[in-house]
Amino acid sequence: MAVAVDFREFKPVDSREDLIRRVEQAPIEHAEAVLAAYDLLLRLHAKGLLDLLNGLLSAGDTVVDRVVDVVSSKEMVTALRILLIFSNLFTLIDADVLHAVIAEAGKETPSLLALGKQAASKDARRGLATAVGLLNVFGAALSKQQSDKHG
Image (cartoon, rainbow, N blue to C red):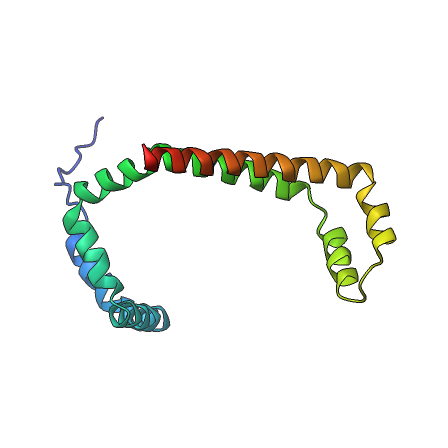
């Protein structure tokens, strides 16, 4: 035969009481972390960063709109492209070789013949050609800037 089952009402755990207990225990269990957080807040307040962040949050969409305007401007796009080009170039430079060249430059002044030998190398000629090309680009930009100013 079947046995009757007692009817029980389901009572979920009171999460509010659990949260209150955890909040009361937190300063005891995590005293060092709480003190570090207070120290951080104090330093942020002393430097005025909390006021700055509060102002940024209050400004909300205005700040985002201004940042988007600046980042999407033609000048910023060009600057970012140039930065990426040079960062890719810098990853190819061997830091040890660069350090050795700078260390050698500080020892004694090389003769004109030694400089001529270095300048005649294939890599030096490539670097000089790139430098002259960059000077042409900057010169054209300066020329355009002056012609725009004068009409």
